[in-house]
Image (cartoon, rainbow over all chains, first blue to last red; front, side, top):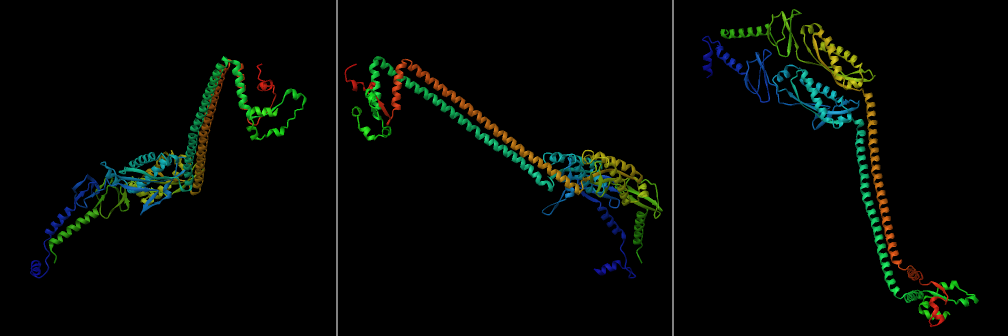
Length: 340
Length: 290
């Protein structure tokens, strides 16, 4: 085999013979021509340059350009979203603050700590990729600088209370608008996808004071709630007491009337009887009453005429506490006689 | 002895490469070029990107960037009209519009940067020094910057440079002033907190006292109504009694007196009585009728 090759390329005089250049040149040319084939991925747009000047652009799919150094192709991604962080940097397993970037002066000359991100991509419109590639040297730096300008501009026209609370949406929107305007003025071919505020906080030295305001707000609600609770307890209780008073009064009235009716009826009944035999009834009532009353009493019977001569001596201190048995044992007439 | 065919291929390739390299130059889409002949720049139009020819050895080509370039200044202090120190960190976007003039005056980008530095900073200081802090931070910022850019641009055209814009990235207070701001913010918040608490107190007192008031009113009304009812009851009773007893007031008095005896003369009461009384009449006078 080796001998065969040697015979093929060795001249008659034994010197080494080069093969013909043409087939090799032809193969070289074909390979060279093949380097011009390129494929544009679905997320890319191709820009073809001839001697450094743009000659055509192309969407996704295969394509061919005259090989280098005559033509070249650039294929920037138009869907890939790039992200920039401001006020912090993502590091492995967390984030690190960047105070100089994060602290901003607000319109009412307070300082607020603000962290945000900007997402952007190459503009999808026809001139986008071309502008992105050739109009700005440092695309990333340009986006970063313009984003800081835009955000500080917006914050500089916002009060700290708005920035901390309800104004977030508006700030994001305004900043995105301003940023896009700046980048458009550079014909940068950059499209801002979103500007998003991550954290908006008061700076550390005043954090506690801000928290205390929130606490104070809650304190206010709590005080008011307590008072409402008190009111809710007191008023029904008062209503109950009032109803009780009224009911008691009503009961008194009804009782009084019923009692009066009863007593009145009783008197009328008695009177009806009395009319029939006035003297007898009168006498009877009198005697009945005394009969009822006298047994319970101590009695001292003194004749008036005797009383005129004899000094009636009343041992008041002895009379006061009589032996109860004695009194009860004695009948009325008997006792009266004895006394007499 | 080398093959003649190979020799010719190599010679042609070398010749083509030499001519390509020495006699042509290409201007990329993002570049401007300046042809310099024996040290002297030629006024040749190479604005459009593409392939150009030149005389080998005698003519050299210098490239400039056509793209938007970046100038980022160091943060510097500026004094505002209301005597406030502000730390300004600004940037500028600029581009080379006249390579010939650019080459003649500042020669290259570092040279341009230092010239930009001088001119933009002096304009900035002058312009910001005529305004208040509030205006610089807030609503007038972009107008001020437009003015600075315009004036800087007017001066930089002499150097073949266009200043596209000048913008303030950061306008912050120096460290020592920040302390003051923080203190002010703190007192401001403390004031708010106090206000909220006082408001709570106020509202709570209102609610409580209103409840107390309502309670008082409710109770007083109830007492009034109750008294009215009691009075009605008493009046009604009196009327009923009167109606009954008016039939014979004397008899009523008699009956009522007896009843009073029953009630008031209780056990242990001592009575000194005369036998002349109605009760003892018979005891004394015997059973003969009167």
